[in-house]
Every structure is written in C-alpha cells, then in structure tokens.
Image 1 (tube, helix red, strand yellow):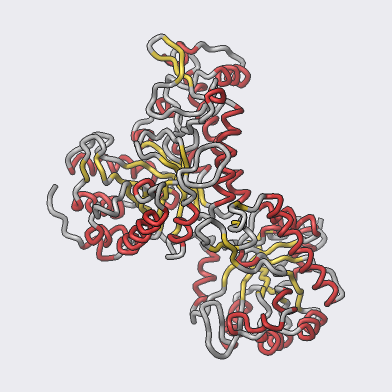
Image 2: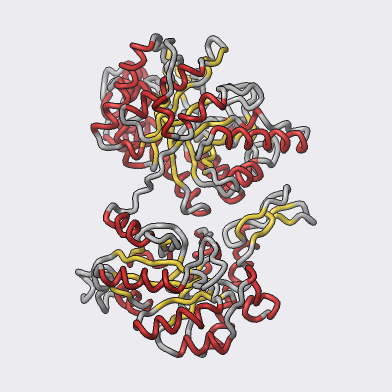
Length: 630
C-alpha cells in the first residue's frame, strides 16, 4: 500500500486563545504564534490536515516526514480575527474544536471572559477548506461532583455523584450521558455546517475507554486527547497532543525534546502515606481537618509525588479488610480516598494510589474456600502462614474478586498512578494451590509433588519462572482494568531489595527485576536498611551500591524509585533526620534518579519537615547539607 513506508508517528499541537491582550497561561500573542509556525517550517516540519492523516491511516496516502497537525480548542473569537487570516496567508490547515452549547447559548459567549465565535464565523472558516471543525462536546465540558464531599472532576471521565439520591451514577448511566451529549453535539454541527463531523476533542483531555467506545459507535474516526507524546496512525482514537506554551523559547526547547522522545525529565521526590493515620471513620470533619494538615506538610516538604494508601489497615497486618472507596467486595471504612486525592492533586502533587493485589480478606467465609495461597511446610500442605494471607493468583475466582475491587477503585477515583503493594510474592514453599499444580503440569507436561517443589529437588527453575509469570499476568489483568477507566495512569510495583542484591532471592519471592522493568512504568525498590538489618554507615553505603549497580548497569535509572525507610518497625523508633538525609543524598549522588521514603507522621512531624525538605524537594542545596556522623 501507499502508506507502507509512511512514518507512523506525527505531532499534534494544542492552541487556545491567540490574543493581543490579557495573555493567560494557555494563550499566545499573535506574534508568538507566527514565530512558532515559521520556526517549525524552517526546521523541516510540514503542516498536514486531518484528511491527510485519515488517508494515511487507511493506507491510501503517505504522511510526510515531520508531519504536524495544528488544533485550536474552544473557538475563541481570536481564531476568526487573528488565526484564520494567518492560516490563509501561510496555507496551513487546522482543527477547530467547538463546544456547541457555548455557541448556542449567548450567555456562554463570555466563557473565561473571552468572546466566542458565532455560527456564521464558524461556517465561514469551515467552508474555506483549511479548517476542519471537530466536536468538543455539547454540555460535558465542565466539572461535576464526583464524591459525597462535592469535589469536582472532569465530566467526561468520571461517574457523577448524585447527592439527592446519595449514590453514584452507574456505568450504564455514564455511557448514556456521554452518548447523548456527543450525539447532540455532532448533530448540531452537521446541521449547521452541512458536512460530516468525524473528529472529537475530549474536554480537558479527560477520557476513559467507556467514552471511547461510545464515540466510536457514533462514527468518530479521530479522537484528540491531551496526553503528551507522539500521535500514531495506528491509534487515532487516542490521538496525543502537546500543549503549546507562550514562553519565548518554547518552540526551540520543544523540538529538542522531540529528538529525545519526550522523556519526562522531572525526578520523583515522593512520600508514601498511610491514610489510616488521618482518617477517623466516625468523623468526616476530623478526617478533613487532618487532611488539611497533611497537605500543609506536603507543601512544606516540597514533594511532587505521593503514594497514598487506599485501604484500611490500622493494625498494620497488611491483610486488608476494608477500603476507602465504594466497592462491591469489602466494607468501606469511609468514602474518603477520592476526596483526599482530589485535594492533594489540586496542589499540583501527583498521586499514586497504593493498593495490595492479593491480600484481601473476603468477608464471606464460604467464598474463602480454596481462594488463598497454599504452602507446603514442615511436611504439611495448607493455607499459607506467611505475613500476608493472599488470594491465590492461580485461582480464577480470586482474580474475579481482585478485578471487582480494582474496577471500583479506578471508576470512582481520579488518580495519576497506581502502586502495587509488596504482597505480590510467592515463597519457595508457595503456591501449592491445586490450580497452580495443574497449571504447571499443563505448561511443562510434568507432574511435580509439593514436597519436591518446595525443597527445590525438581524443576526448580521452571517452577520459579511459572510463579513469577503468574504473578505478573495477574497484575497485568488488574492493570488492564485500571487503564479502562484511567488510561493515562502510570503503574509502579514494589520489589524486595533482596531480589536485587541476591540472585537466589528470585526463588524466595518469585520476583524478577528485568520482568519489572519491562512491565511497569516504575519499579519501587524497598531500600529499607533497618528491615534488612544493615547497620553502620559503611555497610549501608555498600548495600546501597549493591542496589544501584544492577539498575545503572541496565540503564534503568529513569524507571526505578529508591524508597528508603523512615521508621524502624522492629524497635518502634524513627530513624534520625541526619541519617534520612544522608541516605537520600547518597542515593542521588551515586546515580538514583527518583527517591521516596516511608512512612510519615504529620502529627509528630516525623521526619522533621524543615530538615528533610531540602533533599526530598529536590533543591540544589541538598548536596551542600553538612551531615553529622551517625
């Protein structure tokens, strides 16, 4: 076909108002706009139309190298008065995205105190042949209540909380709301412009798989998001776009990033938090007050990432009996997670929800039969006696239970990422679940008894690989569910430090660093010196080196977070602030890209915020801190 050798990737740029006054954060001056267009052209970039992109996707045409599509959201009057004449002069095509209810309602003509285009103006630019009009929805370009606390989230990607009925919108109701809205927008546009509308631009760039399915049913052929990255001809229903900035040298810096593949250069400086510490299930007022204190502390620390507990575990057993979000499986300690995530993200801090994958204690005793990991120990086969009582990753019913929990989590909470707890492991004496043994026989064609497998007398390599793959596949299924509702969510998974420092530990945990690096956005190494019994600064430095070397030798520093220990659980005492700073500084000075710590106590100011802030916030002064001897 004609497009066989065509580049599959192209750039899409997002503009809003091009104005000569009152320039906001997403606006450009006319001079800056022209300067950007000329800069792209002078560096070999070619501006293309949606028609050319769709033809290339069908294989009937070829996109030029360095293809760029310009898009303009919201239809401000400046598009007609300033942008359109420039497009005509330079013969540059563009997409104009229309929120039909704003144009239909004269009162909406002052959105953001900016005047919008009229239907006559929209018709004129559409008839020019240079401008392709897209739907930007009819009435879902707004925020809606997304939890009982009334926090607002993007309408097109979240279930509405119906306060008068004290319930959440169902998925069926969500689908119908989006379908009806998009259909109305498309119908109005096609009637006004007398031509088909095949492009949809998600309001706020917020979407999920349910909405995409409805858009596809309605006949949209290209869907524009605000997810940064190269757009790809193979996935036009998730066309990524870059947000244009007004800074003087933005274009130059942007094209430098193009050459590096748009790698996120922001280093993670994070803290893992126990929501249990601030939530009182009997008092929302107290819980909300505590959340405010926590956010103040996060701002003092200067962290840019939070790993936030999504479940209840006040006893610290790691075996989960309740959660902080609506779900069909476990009791809800308080519907508070969505509120906490919303408030933290509002302060421009990214939030990963922290969840176990297997250690759920199903309330119904009948449902527990045969669900949990089995071990062969001391000559006996039975339910595991390990720290975590885990659902077996080999049991299909267990997967259904975990799937329901993660589906409810992702559909009700708008988060940036997901961190899997350290419960996703299997010791050398686990998992002797009947489904595991039958699956092993089916995979390798051999029968192996629990005593032989546990003792490593036969097929040990195959058994370890089989279990490692089973855990990864189990989590992979949960990730797929999460991505249905939160397609841009990043995925991180905890790994035990001994798996990094001791090759034999793969057998003990069924975890593998290379497997992690391939599957997840971030691998979180639990660099806990006290938990691992590494005492003395000299030994700790060597131990950190043993964690750093395998990561650096694989060129994986961008994908690994080193999480240090702030509290000694065995001796029930906090590590000294000086030691915390010393450890984090050493890791960063010797190649770590991302660092975090756990736990944190907002009420006790542990670790001490003013001491830890210079290093955990990433300030340059961190390397200059004078640290007293341990």
